[in-house]
Amino acid sequence: MKAWHDIKKKKVPEKKSKILVTNNIKSRDAHGQMSHIWLVVGVHKEGNEYFAFDGSFTKIHNVTHWTEIPE
Image (cartoon, rainbow, N blue to C red; front, side):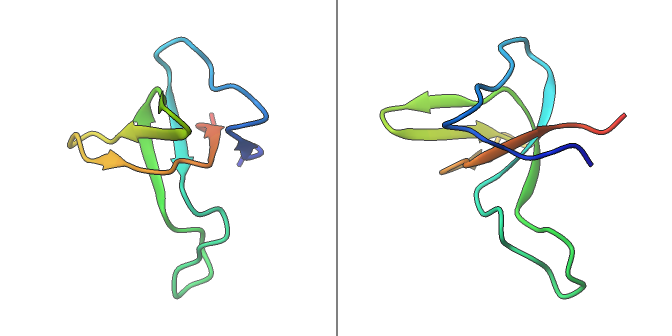
């Protein structure tokens, strides 16, 4: 997988491309795999908070990192 970028240090691409986001970069599931990952189209900022919406229009709060989808 490509590197995860801190949303405050590297801006999310402006085009409406699909990306992966997380709000807890250190989270792991029972198998040691990264959890708290969502596929979204774009990230929004309101005040100091970054957020995104997944495919079912659930709002993901406090997005901290993003990465491009592996090819």
